[in-house]
Image (cartoon, rainbow, N blue to C red; front, side, top):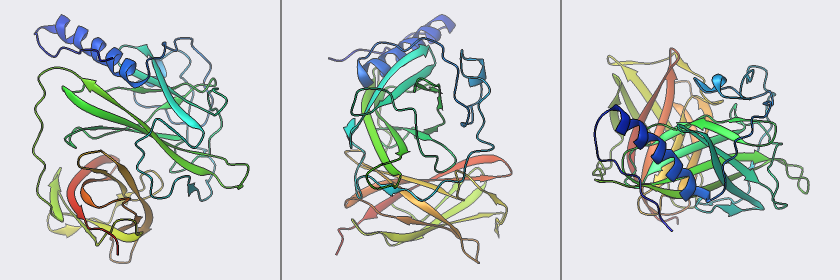
Length: 310
């Protein structure tokens, strides 16, 4: 069953109705579950997104003293993240405000998970991507004690999307936290026009920075990649740490929107921001490289063609 979100009409009242309808439809398409509206005192240990402290039950959260996380292992090495249920976990959602998405990650017993292993300075990472690989968003949800997560939802243009959540949960059988990725598609209806995919390139410009990437990725093989950043013809040395690394690299494949992450390994003596990446399959991918300079976040995007592994 599908629902419609109209993007036609003008005026402030129409825009407000459009935003509320968009969010409600997104959440309905994601899960079809009832809204989770009961305020609950939040669990400390996660940084609140801007403006979230005003939500009922969402104040007084901080990641400032988050524990140093151990290494985590992929629950499904080479996975694509294209399932709503995997590894004994499932993704469900509801809403508490017109511009706020809420969701729960349920365990095999059907109950919301409330215990996570911190990694990358967060407990859960939420991504949204449009089917034409535009409109990439990295959102920072916050958790209440009952296991409900909430994040501000930006205004979305008409089109097809997929929302991903990535998290690490302790696994008692192995003694190692396992990293899981779940997702669901959704549609914002209206007059949608796909943006053309830029040609493959190793350099781009964003916010006055010249950003380049290096690497020779092959499907199914872990390989090193790197990101260089310059401004005014000079290498930028003062890159801030961002999500426990210097570059947050996320890629989505053309067609099915399969997701892969490249995990930061730091930076080398020449200032190259380094990471290890494993693309689960061949094809054309859109790689988003996020970095932070002087407290400001920036996102550079590259089209990458990944050949089949040997």
